[in-house]
Length: 528
Image 1 (tube, helix red, strand yellow):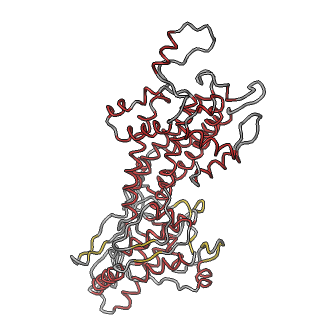
Image 2 (cartoon, one colour):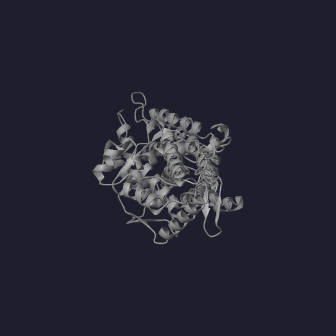
Image 3 (spheres, rainbow, N blue to C red):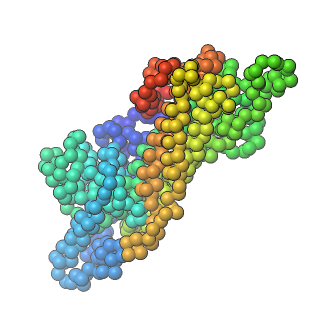
């Protein structure tokens, strides 16, 4: 699903996508601000300046922030403009400085790059009152490869990502914080000097505009969602191979069955499996299985039951909602990427300044919570399929743990332990973050989205699902060898050959971590 990008356009009449997020995360491709953005930003800035000059009470300019909104600038009615504008500037700088207090693990610089791109895109649309120089400064820092060091904890997703975004803003205004600069960690003033840039001097509401929005949580969600959309068909392929190795009965996958279910995702996933199994001699026909039960056969190998376990025959019904939720989440996340997630919002045409709550991240939270739940279910399912293949009670005559000599070797028993460890963690991640909302900040933020928490857990859940997919691939490859790989579907044989280039058949026990990591890399490079 990857597309090469030569440049990314932001601002008025521009629409960012998940592909843009992925492209910009790892490449130094240029960002261009659309021509329409400059007059839009300037008009917004000029109108805001006019309102400030008229001493209009405006949140975050002539007031303090959050639960301190009741504190009006004492110079608001002063005839002398100097103290008034000095106090506005002090508040803009102070809100950035005071919120630069995050803790925890350092967030990957690629996430910060996307965050900065999204913040620039939001402000460039001309509804935030910032001067064009604010957006130009963000782009200049990105071009110079300066990304502030941002830590894991600080955002609760109300007023947006205050602490992470304030940390980025602190770098822009030259505070003495750590930044990444060409692979090294320097203090922001040193990096700015080495890059030949100038620090940003915030005015009017520049400080608030830089920190008040959903750009951080959206960056995390966008990159993880891109990864999950790439992973989803790969995961289905690993499932298809495992079902082949289990001699799945195709009656449950008859198109009529799924047409009658009337669920779009259901039918799409089912069609995927039917296409994958083209040419397979391993999948079972129900009538043939029935006939085997009618024959007098003295052999110890009993024919498989006429109906498969739930984990085999209900995959289309189980993964159909996941497929549909991926599309729903894409709409929500891309809408948020392109949103004006700021407060206040300045409407120059109507000459209005709207105090609002567009900084709330509920669509990101919902998208991540919904998909985390799907991932939790999928993780449990992949573990169940693995269990089918390694347990002699359920595997329809495959060797115990897929070991050639189970009296000496352990085969894939360890793979089930690893899969269980990953699955239970993803089940924990499946909890909905919105149920954990905690009133804070003097009860001004008495509800909050927790969008960043949801996005960070979503990110880890996707990584674990990718690990589980790699496990299922190498396990299915071994199981299909026992069935006769020449009998498998053409697609299964193609994937099998790629896997065997890097992970040979497991005969004697050996460490497998490096091989699994190699398979994961193949998934990331879309070679499987």
